[in-house]
Length: 113
Length: 109
Image (cartoon, rainbow over all chains, first blue to last red; front, top):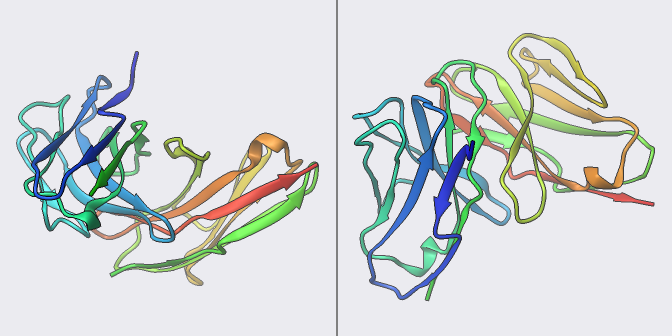
């Protein structure tokens, strides 16, 4: 059982390029989340999905989009990358939105130059 | 927005006890979580409190006072492998998690 996988592990991207970060979970969890983690700021929620077919905006959604076509996959797209999007991106999932812990993927380290 | 405060760094000796405090002000409250994150790795779940009081799980305990907006994580019998960042996270009224910046604990021999 893999849990949550993310791809790529790391990426260097030129500013202005489009990039999709992939996230897949095999736990049949209903809820999925994307966070970015920056030094001194902690984890900040970008977008979330409470169940397949629905998505919502988190604390820092600008410049990012997501889709949730099925239960397992929750890709995050940067339409036109900017240097301020340099960060470590974590995907997470939970059984539901109630009193459930979130399980985190290994992260993607993205550098926008 | 949410406001979650925790110390930036703490250092302790192997075998000792360390207490990491977390204070919060959020829009609604649906539980407080503690996560452990080793350098370069993903956060992993440690504890969850939704009612006032102490939750004990082996060497780790977590306390919550909702009226004071306060929690602490207690690490006992510290081991070198406990060197990590400890993240306090609060679930708000919309069931979204907001994280503090994390406390880096360094355990010295």
